[in-house]
Image (cartoon, rainbow over all chains, first blue to last red; front, side, top):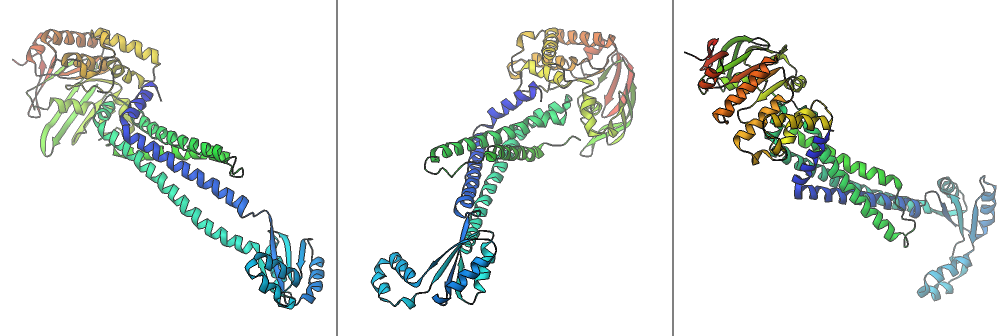
Length: 277
Length: 223
């Protein structure tokens, strides 16, 4: 684009006024929201769901006396793993510790009222097959794996995150519409000038490019503001939540997304330009 | 340079040009005259392809305008210098930018654009209004900016629609002298005017239109 094009963009930025500012703010909010959501999403997966961490499989035994045969079979199973066996007395004491108000009752009960519990620590990838193997053992009454609640939590989180991203996409779509309206209003306001430019030999690219650059500039400015807000938040929360790190990919993807929405909006806005005969 | 063959043009069923056939040679100076509503402006609009004929054929500088693809129209128009009756200046741009904009379409360097724009405005006596907006100029000054813009590209063909309409008689004759001198250098000039005194003072081939018909093609003003 030549100097005339850049001067035209400058004039258009001035003329876009309050609508232009609104477009920038909307893009800033949309990108900050999307960035925040992506960061939280990563943090939940990394820290809370701990897909790469060990999971625990718990087996409740039918008969405490069968514990020895079960642990021997477990040791014989390929892929060494750590396990702890809680005898009925230990289970009784543990439960009394968890529920102090029931401690007197719990401690008054007979020891055989409590089962022996086997806790096995396994790699996340191994937990499902281990749980199936334990469930198939005659010594085991009930098997529970920590990955089961993790999966439930993940399903719920996935729904929440999807909704969040739909909202971010809707916001970005809103930005596109606002930029579209800004450009459309400018195009309608400049209709006479556009006609004159054509009559004196301006190419469509000479006419349209400044508007697309305007949309791109509105989108890029808004998304950079959004990224700055995210960086500020990152700096403020770094001390309290060191794990909540802002991904460097976001610093590239978000401005590109904002600029893309702006340019896309401008391109749609330019449909208002009447065609030559 | 220009050839029209049985050109018909009407607006909402009302004929503006009825079967016009004529040709204008390269380096010719031609007046297009006739009363208001005779079809002079329509004739010119067809020549710079602001309109397409309903029927007939128009060839300008080798371009068959009805068959000219839309993407080639800007390139065609950059070969013309058009002086519009209502000036058609870009209101949001300064006088200097109005001139240098057409030069920028040729991808000339910025310095060269400024130099040529200055010289074109100096020729019109407006070099001291370089940074003024068109609305800050009088009608005559705006007309001269429009003329400078048309001439700055040194086109092969100049189309002028009532170019002296907003100028005082002295300026009008100066403009005609300028167009004549450009014509002597080989540029084809077509001037639409209803000013008989202008044709009498600068005799040239004259095409007279009346109610869309070409009624006369002769030298000088109508007797």
